[in-house]
Image 1: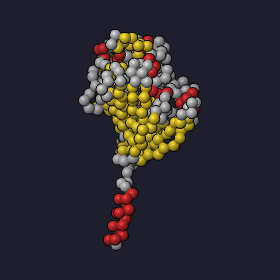
Image 2: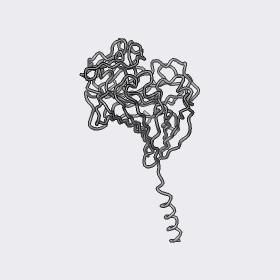
Image 3: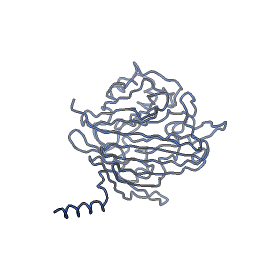
Length: 378
C-alpha cells in the first residue's frame, strides 16, 4: 500500500501542481488585413470566468455568480468579431493613449502643440479615431496558477494619432482563486509624451441582456468632489462639492433615483452621467475603493479598487437600441454603466489636475481590481 501511495505521489509531482485557476485559448476571427484575433478565457476555482480578446485587449465576457448560485455574464459585448469591427462602442476595451476627452484634440508639451484626431464633437475621445481599442494586441503570455493571467502588448509608433514618442504598452488580466479580476496597464516611451490608459467595460450586474437594465443598481462612490463639464463634456477646471447635488453617491443610492430627479445642467449636457468623480486630488500610494455597485435582485456586488485619483462614471446614455448583444437582446439607454479608474479628463490642458506626462526611463502604471461578492438578502 505504501508503494502505491508513493507511486501516486511521484506521478502527481511529475505532472506538476494542480492549479486552481486555468485558461483556454481559441481563435476569434481575423480583421480585414488578415491579422488573427484570439480569445482567452481565464477561469477561477469558484467558477467565475473572464474572456478577453486581443482586439483592443478587451473584456468580451465576464461570468459571476449571484445569490441563487446562478452564473450570469455581466459585461456587454458581441458574440463574434463582426460586431466589434462594425460598431465597436468601446465594449470592454483598453482605451488610450489618453483615455477620456482632450479639448479640441490639442495639447502642448514642452512648448510644442500636438493635434490628435477629433472624434467626439469638437474633441478627441479615448485616443482618437484609431486608439488602443481598435488595434490587435500581441498575446505575450498566458499562464495558469493561483491566478490565471494573460498579458497583451501593443507598440504605438511615434506620431500615432498625433501623439509624440513610441510607446510600448502592456495589458495584463488576472483572475485569482476567489474570482476577482485584476487589470494592470503599463507603458514606457522613448521620448516625452502623455499617457492615461483605462478599461471601458460596460457592466450590468443583473446580467447582459437583462430586461432590468443597470440603473436600478445601488452605486457608491466615496468622493467629496467631481469635475463639472461644459456642454461638450470637457471639464471647466473647477472642483465642485457633491454634497446636496445629484452627484452625491457617498452612500449607496439607486442610480435611477438620481437621474430621475435631476434638474442639473450637468445631467443635461451628458444626457445622464458622463463625469469624473474626484476620490482624491492625487494618485494614492496603495489601491483603495473607488466605487461599489450592487444589484439588489441578484445580490451581485462589484467593488473597484485602484491608486487612480478619479473614476469616470458613464450611465450608458447613448445606448440606443440599435446594438444587439450576446444574449440576442438590444442594448437600450441605461442597460449598462461604465466605471473607469484614471487621471482626470483633459488633464494635459489642466495643470491643476496633475500630470499625465511620461518620460523615457519612467514606467506608467494603472492597476485596478474588480472584486466580486454576493450581498445578503435585504
